[in-house]
Length: 395
Image (cartoon, rainbow, N blue to C red; front, side):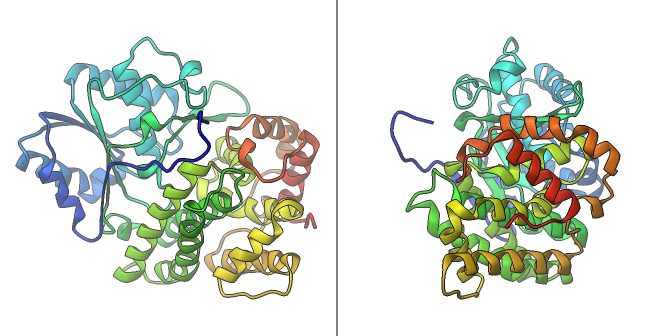
């Protein structure tokens, strides 16, 4: 990933806590394009952002056509808006889809001749940015943490099964992240559950990553423990301001970790389920997590036992700790109404079995796989998928 062994890179400016959206009034610039979706429009946050930008003397335009798991076609439509408006600020407002779409638009706005194939080359594919614009990310969910990370996930709908491709480049790490809990406080319980589980998975995969360091480890443990404690409270009562702020902060912290360690097989496999079957990203991660933990146990049991301990479950040995961690995850899934296996999520059996070989192949190629603590074979990934479909333990 670099010519030296360790690093810790996050946005230069991170503003968080209730009311932090008003930091927009302090931005410097002349023109901004807001990349968002219809939900943010309907909730009134787009107008609020435009108002703050106006106070800063910044003219704004809006692209609000981002869909869940944004496509290459959507990205190029937004790029055309930017080419016409010529902003010096790009503001990604919304969930991970809006912020990631904005990152990809940023690349093509500054480099019209770059190709999709080039930008998806890890760490070297994205050219130097900030020649035309800086990037501001404002998340509306407590989960993806893309506001502080090096990744942008874009779905290729021109292939079957659909594939989620993503950049891995610190060039697309936002310049400014504004994490105001007011935005995620509008999430319904099911979105709170899905995105909140993503926080736990980010922290867990960062902690067991082959790139984990003494800097990322304590942040990973703390953010996972915060999410485990506060997610049920935010799920049960969306108006709980303390729970909402704790979850938004935990999401940001988990982002600090995995953007510096990379992820693993939970994400590699969940990306395929999300792309092909439309399962929300955090929900797919939640369903895949127990099975990948069981698969990884021979290589990472002591680390999973650490996670169980952070959740409040002591153990006499690493294997017992791993089992307690898996049980804690499954109990939390049940509490939040998340299916225990892919079959229970409504994925058609015949269709899944017809595609599982290709899903496994795509997961093997996924950019998250190399950081997994156990090196998988193609057959092992296929087996993980099959166990996750039928709810069969791997241990």
